[in-house]
Image (cartoon, rainbow over all chains, first blue to last red; front, side):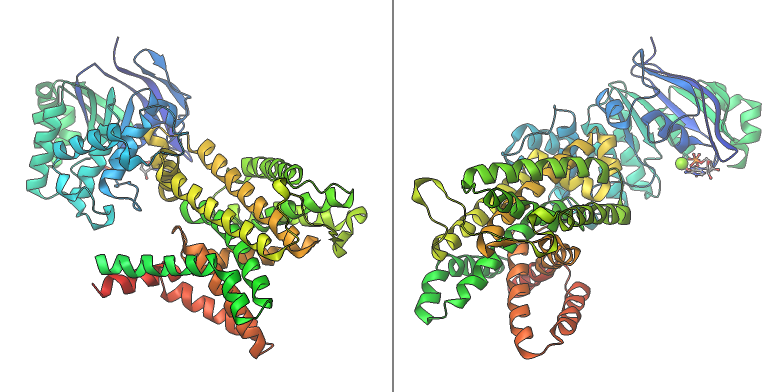
Length: 246
Length: 317
Ligand SMILES: Nc1ncnc2c1ncn2[C@@H]1O[C@H](COP(=O)(O)OP(=O)(O)OP(=O)(O)O)[C@@H](O)[C@H]1O
Ligand SMILES: [Mg+2]
């Protein structure tokens, strides 16, 4: 059974199909990359998977469970985590508090009114560890608004990871990063690879070919090819539609 | 920074000490009228603190918060009208009435955002206002006089104005303590998080609606208790207590003091009541000047008076 199974997913915005009959699978521990030109529908697809957007038709199964109509927070609790292409963090809190929120979200309900979170080691210690892993520990007590663009991207990924997801959906994690930061991010993703299924959207072809076990190519809402990195590299249609304009 | 914390904390401690000894100070300077002023201020500070919980920490800009002041007050006024003066019984009615009103209205209001939320909270409060205006039995828009204040256990009498004051003061301290614990707990993290980025909170796995709704109810009940005190204090209730202008004033107090800071509403209410008192003695156009002053604070002092204090604190390190 695949970790994620997407069948014939469709979404249109006022007559324009952003995704059209999309079917993909992500196996356990696999890193599946989706590439495609701007406006191809990649972010739309991710939003349909997480429940940010409701699909017009099609089905989504996570670990064999039909989640097509579940609200966002339930999908998250079932083990689906997302990082956003446009950084979306909690800007009135510190870096570690953002990560603590992710940890908290996955550890039962939050109808706990009395003990300060700063005294809850199960939150603070786990969060600290994750910040060490992504290399943000020195910024732990800073406000998110004081971070550089690259650091905010790292936090974005750290928050998704802190949810201990079964499936991690990364929407262009390297977007707008400098080359040093990108290299760090690539190393980081390859270090967590295998432990959790990952659906990665990325424009950087070097990164994609380095990290991916499988690649699907999305053009104008349609998957035009899907296969191993070698197959995709050699696919004529893909070269014409997408890789050619590199 | 240490010096800064001292100044900021110092002002808070000074104000709390002033409030704690207010009846003695007022007695000493022999201006009994001021005790009324300070009592009213403390009651309004409770209401403002409760609004701050949803507005400052939770990002829920309720324009109908005075409804709870009114409901709390009618929860003593109506029993008193029928000769029921048991304070705890009245308090239970307050809590049940405010709890259900906030639960029902919150359930609808919290499905909206931004300006719609503001409008719909206002609309519900106005409905309550007009409902009470239309009930002839309870005095319609003239209201009711309460001939006896609530009777409390252990012979604690609210007819004594100093006891009345201390009850208000201790309830203020108690509620501030509760709010402090709440906002730093797991529950508070969810409330504060969804104030700025609700959809991200949901994608982390929080069903934010139910937490926000509970927060809305807690704030409503707290403000109801302030209304219970206000009805007792003024010996009089009328629909005017929940007039929309009163809701607006509560918002001003919170913003003036510093939304989302624990003591902000206390500072804001103190400033509001004092300035109102002083200006209204000088000129009949005081509301104009007061309005200008408020606009200036909102425009130039981010974080209100509390923000201003911390700013001074930080620059003198
Ligand atoms: N909320 C929306 N309302 C209307 N149209 C939308 C909406 N979101 C996306 N679209 C349209 O759907 C199409 C796909 O957009 P999407 O953001 O999914 O592309 P993408 O592959 O993520 O592109 P990029 O590489 O630039 O991030 C685009 O034509 C876009 O304009
Ligand atoms: Mg995109």
